[in-house]
Image 1 (cartoon, rainbow, N blue to C red):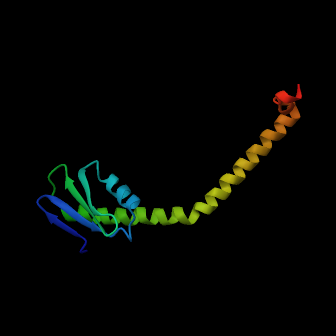
Image 2 (cartoon, rainbow, N blue to C red; image 1 turned 60 degrees about the vertical axis):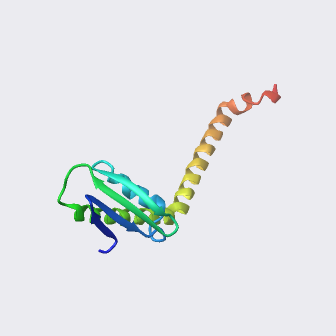
Length: 122
């Protein structure tokens, strides 16, 4: 894989923001903050450079770079699925709120609380 370089105890991963938007890059980077220091740099329109510096000495620098790339794919896929399902989620939420609203309205009508809550009717 040619999008990373290991130098001076850090891993520099070059990320194309046209493939992975900034929110995906931030999400992937966040996963690594427990065991690594993370620095984001570059031009968000052209190239984002992610510097990953392990908090403890390790011989698995290449593994960390590959895991970061896997997390980019993971969160990229999640973002695509989220976008694809946005309409469905909105529809379900609308139906739930519509049903809950109708139930509350029926209850108010049955108990008379709807009429009692109108001060202009007194």
